[in-house]
Image 1 (cartoon, one colour):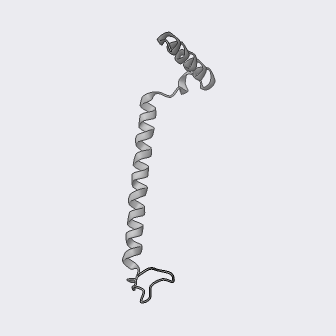
Image 2: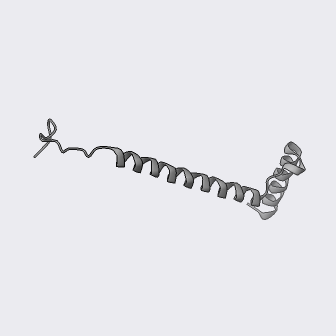
Length: 76
């Protein structure tokens, strides 16, 4: 594909975006990157919160006992 065709297609796409959402609302690469950073931080915070909740549940749970008998059909 020629560079000219790609360039024209990019300009058309940008023009359509500006027409649809308005010049003031066109997203930039910097805005997209910032949103990605914020989403990564939110996922990291959720992972930490989940890990703390699981650790708290495990700390409060009684220790499990091993089964005296193997499960039915289990090989020895």
